[in-house]
Picture (spheres, rainbow, N blue to C red):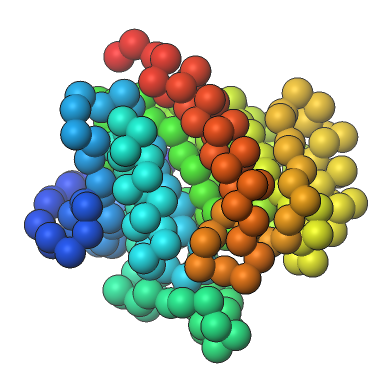
Length: 243
């Protein structure tokens, strides 16, 4: 698998509306995308790249980044839709879902990987983990199997992962799935488990998107437990690293 490890150009501009700020990241192919960066109050424990769902870097993803900043991590959420629909933020109505799917279908997977790699490299100087949700959950798996500069990765309900189960993780990785997720059949999750018995794969009594408190399938208890497990992995492999 190819890797992208060249240093991007990284410029910062203050926004003020959220806890964090908007940044601009230039990728190795010259594309410039935006991202949302949240900083902890004190010295950072490490850094995390937060990968969006199919709804853009919306208020929910920014709140997720803010939450990781509260835990002591620099959190950077790159806007992976910027190549097709710059600046778009969607909600969770049926129309938003359809719009998000249409935009997602126009994003070349290698371009998404390149943009994600640029975000990882933008955080050089800190041990860096990757965490992704929905589409981002699948990309987080690819971060573990393809990218340099990643200390650990966590994927939430990544529907593409069963089809990529043949890829071998190069970094510690953890996966979360919902038992009643209609978009990811349980046999797909079992395929991952068989291919990677050493990878922690956790199941929850919830549906797709259970971590998002703006979605109908939000399940607070599952979200809390998954977050605790995610933070434990990052504490060991990101915050636990000396740099």
